[in-house]
Amino acid sequence: MSRWSLMVPTMPLVLAWVVRMTASKYADEVVDAGDCLLVRRGSVQDRVELSNVLEVRGEGLRDRSQITLFLAQPGKFGRKIFFIALRNRSFWFQSSDDLSTHNDIAEDLARRLNR
Image 1 (cartoon, rainbow, N blue to C red):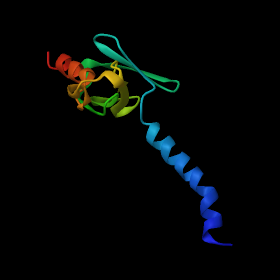
Image 2 (cartoon, rainbow, N blue to C red):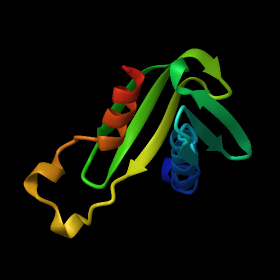
Image 3 (cartoon, helix red, strand yellow):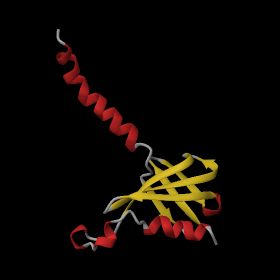
């Protein structure tokens, strides 16, 4: 039996596992409730007070950004919460300024933390 006969059937399983492990860190839903964020991943929900958020980072591309919240006290999802924020702009009608990694959601959360 050759190496390829074992590798070919197992590659999709390995790839599926990697994708699942990578995607499982992201929250399914984050709702801004003013003074807190309601975070859900699967059937687990957590209420994250903005006063518990130390830092907000936003990294992204044209139509979506990864937002990372760093917490002072760990919640149900640990000290970091990751979620993907979609932008409301159409890809086809973006100006060159919109193609940057600038993220309004991360900036808004950071501004509210510094009040």
